[in-house]
Image 1 (cartoon, chains in turn orange, red):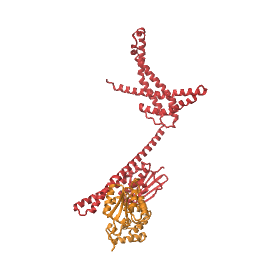
Image 2 (cartoon, each protein chain N blue to C red):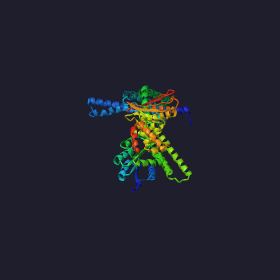
Image 3 (tube, chains in turn red, green):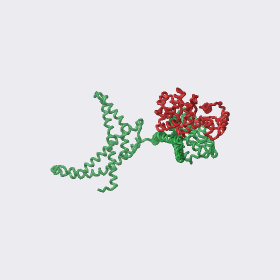
Image 4 (tube, rainbow over the protein chains, first blue to last red):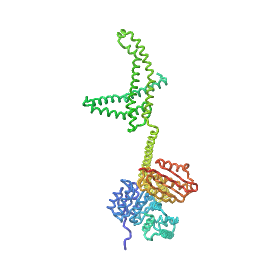
Length: 221
Length: 403
């Protein structure tokens, strides 16, 4: 018999607002993570990742000293040096180019969410787990911003419902997740997805994050 | 003592005129002695009678040049403080007029001013002669009995002179005023040109200051209220997710508070975006526009060609234009889609927002459009709008980006 209970997964938090950091620690612990370190800037984050080799890093984009994209730069470095560490970015606003940079090499174990999404604790915990498991969690706003840059719009061929499904796919949701969000059956979702893939000539793929990759490639990331 | 108001006013004016005249004496009078000094040194240099002269000559010569410029500023002060005439600050290169005033006209006025002061002093002395002659030793007065006749004449003439002083002083002040206006003032067109330069600078300063203020408020909100609200909503969300065995009333209260907190975050975020979005500072107009387009309640297609960043004030106006335009489209146009293009060509940043709505938008009516046009004008931009009834509506804004 194997022991199927997974080992406790460890996380580090990089967030300069102390209030929010305390809250994030609580959420991560609720989600079953062990918080190995909580830091307030990019340099300290890299040091903490070097030391603890966590499964997940939750990173604020805007941190000291410059309060611009310190978090993104640290995250890119983490992705390069420790590909096993999943990264979930939190940001006050969405900058799709940051997301594009983060997704450029591979789309596994990456998330980019607006900061305010942490308030919806259950969904946020789901996103945390998905990212730590190697999946993807993109904010709906990221997907929306990627869409406005499309010049000629093959998306016009999609129906309203299919667009919704596509956006949820790009966020990294599973069929069950999409079905839950739209209050439809899973088989209906599967049908929509088949239509989308057919209309957009996307390659068929099985894993969730490869599906995201396909969608994002299509969106021009 | 009760002084009649007319007399009081006359005394005040006399005092001011005399101060003005007296202040003019050193300012006008300094040049002739310097000229004489320089002249003697020059003569000494030429005929070789003084070995120090070639060296000393430069001292008065330099002082003369300095006077030609420096005295203008002193005269400006004198006219403003004592005469209420605001002369413009003359530029260094407007040397001819400054030299002419300080070197040629000034000394003449100096003489007139001295004369006036002399009349005043003589008048005072003569008018008061009975007093001070009365203080002479008794023996002297007994020896010169005839002096009283002369004293009588002198005091009469002195009083006449004193009576003339206010009119003379007033006349001199008016004359100086006229001459200063003619010589130290600038022409109307030049004055206007300066005014435009001043206004341009001060307006740019005001626009920048307003931007800086918006940015400061944005940072304060980001560092303070926004983080606090997110933490609050997070804690409420945690309570909602973890405290499952609460009585339904308590759960309802927590639910309510959680929803309110999330709405407050949304409201604050949109307020901050309306003020001055952080993304604009950090990543520029290009990045800020895609956020705007994506948040709009209707499909928006965005096309940008912005090879370089514009001045912060210009980027802020462009962002505000698109934000307001999309707001308007969403509220009034009944459009199904909108297109936003932002391109930089040479020194012009052109922003075009079109929609396929019902049209009929009038910048003269809606306060949103009016504010938009005003903000465009604040950076010397051009605002055009074409919105025939039935649509489509096209708004074009061109902002100058002088580098």
